[in-house]
Length: 489
Image 1 (spheres, rainbow, N blue to C red):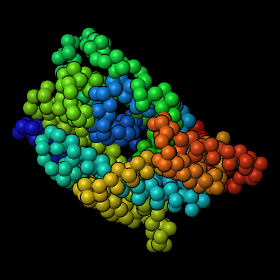
Image 2 (image 1 turned 90 degrees about the horizontal axis):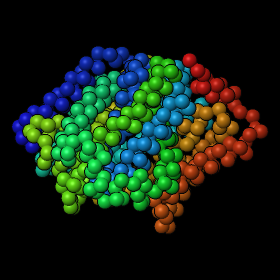
Image 3 (image 1 turned 135 degrees about the vertical axis):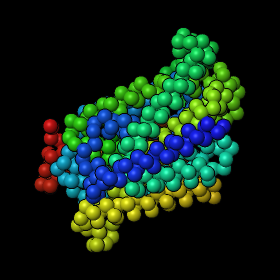
Image 4 (image 1 turned 135 degrees about the horizontal axis):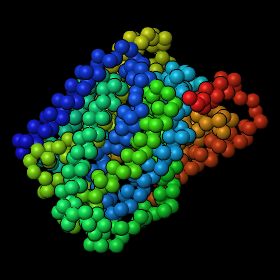
């Protein structure tokens, strides 16, 4: 990294802070802080949903898969997400907006106490918050690893630089700062990705290289499905992605909740899905060509970083690194904002009466405190990543296992077809999915089963118990909730 690269990085972080300061003026209460007052434009919601759906792991872990396996990374990751989000635009996204409009919710788990009961809501809220501490902490550590690849600086610098900047803008600016920094980060990612795309395409022989590189790469690299990412894996993974990207991952639900209408939420979801369909083709092309440019890399996860340093001049390397920072900061800051909403709206009021019936200004003050504390704790975990040894990896694995089962009652609970699935169905489905995950860790099973079995079992239990209860009366508040969230503009 040269002086010009560091200048670009510095300007990037200054821009993030300035957006936070600007957003501060738009915050009047907790509704503005968590849901942008329900005034989030559909195009901004769609872009924010898109960039909040992936982190710097795309440029490390997924880059490694692109390097070793080729085109399959687009099929099982980007294409599957695109289809899931576009279908969800019709089925799920509008319902999140209707929850805020009709029930004034500010967090994704807030409605669960009405739909099921308080215990179910608290189980999901506490599980998600605790596991997210380590999940976000690991993402900060990933940023430190990226900076280390480019500069050789210790991991702690990457964690502190990106974390402290995010801590500032998300604490003072809330969701408005989150989505506008998402927008700025998206523009930076697009510019950086297009530059890398054009440089690599020109180096490989121009436009003809878009198809030509595949004849020079191993035959398996051009296949849609490649072990262990088989057709079965892709079909199973779709269920996990559908639940996650349509609100099971809480920060993504927040984008829909903040929309002014169900129609706006739907349009935002369509935009996000289309971006997943198109943008990854530009982003992954340099990674697919990397084996021809830098063959024999011992650690393929470094392929994108090494490619940028070898091909790009001073300044542009810094821009690419800013794009990598942006990808992770977008996800971590949106996680912090949404987790703060869950803590402030759903957990604290059940721990102490003094947190009940807060005014908008009181909720804002508590929200800023919980955002700061949560983000600070994740930074400590990120910095101490090595001391945890395999613990963080284990917890992240458990988070991945839990997100599917928890998402089943969250998402299906919005749909009229499953209104007979009550709190017993919800809790049983979560524990059934978790038990299935444990079993898949005890015995050796194919990747498709280890990824999909917990979600599929949860689905079977949730839907099955709903079928058993089909002749039992439904509480009037549940009937009304399902009716209200399924209204059309």
